[in-house]
Amino acid sequence: MGDGKTLHDVQQRLHYRYITGIIAVCLLVACGPRNDVYNPSHFSVRSVVAPPDVAVPKDWSGAAFDFNGLYVETPQALACCWIAAQATLYVRKSGRANKLLAGFWVPNFPAFTNGQRVRIALPGDANAGWQDLDANGATAVAIPLAPALRNATGLVPVRITSENVFVPNQNAAPPSLADRLLVFLGLRAAHPNSDDRRLGVILRYLYFDSNEGPRVQTATIPSGASQAPFFPIGIVPPANWQEQQRSGVWSADTRASCCFLAKRADVHLSNPAGMQMVAFDIFVPSYGPLTSQPITLACAFDGVTSGPPVRLKLGKQTVTFAVPPALRNTPHLTATLESSVTWVPAQAGLGKDRRELSVMLQRVGYI
View 1 (cartoon, rainbow, N blue to C red):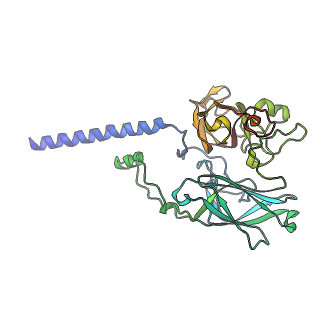
View 2 (cartoon, rainbow, N blue to C red):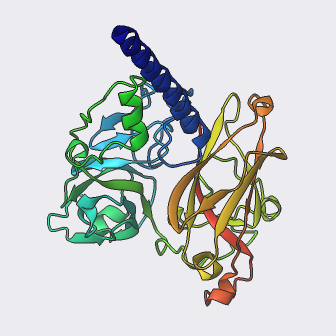
């Protein structure tokens, strides 16, 4: 009798463990892909992500790799790009320029509680100073060029040294409750963090320019006769000024100020065939109503709504929307993005710009 009761108890415990496992998996699936930590590793990747003017090999293997201290990513990571604490990057220079523009992002990690400091050295500059980067956010840095370098062209080596070093496996966060539950149930093997890279900071962009540098706050409108050169990376730019007005994707004269959207913007996707998800890099500036009202972003593909709106926060973030299965092989696809909150630069004390703007779209990736 005692043995039968013991066997019954064991069977009950196994039954409860099986039911708990099913519930845990369902909860994880229900969470969906619209969060920053979702890892869509089973999707097909079609491109590599790196700062546009920084040279990387053309014959990449389709996986993340290290090149001269730049950790080039695939869109699986939905973020770009870490650089090593000591990195020498080769930046394309096609003509006259009087400064180097660099954009950095310091993650919200304990190692960067007080921000980060970087030294950016160009050829012939043996005494480059340190640049202070803000904690938990973006910082733009402009480095004036020496006269001998202003007219140079080709690949220019840029050495970036970071003061604080971040080693992922020494600063790894403890596993989440869901991860621990999956390991406990035997549904996932325990994978210790073996990432021992000596990282410095996330590099958002690095390029030579002859303008005045990043001017995110001005949000100026270029005239129809002088189209600004930059649009969000990964989209098909409007063919002319009139189309830009209709689509609501405003071009910019620097990558740092690219690109504000109207309240409702039509984004023409550059490589939609077969993709399952689209990842949008969004930046919410601290202007007017954006700082005081809840902000949501809705998305529709060719008029078909892609799930509920996503809640945004101030600063940089990546949001993903699933493409409806019936549209995944459509040759040309338009994503309509609509923000719940708008602001007018003139009302925020930023010149005479009367446009009704929403958030900034900086990059589009395909998964």
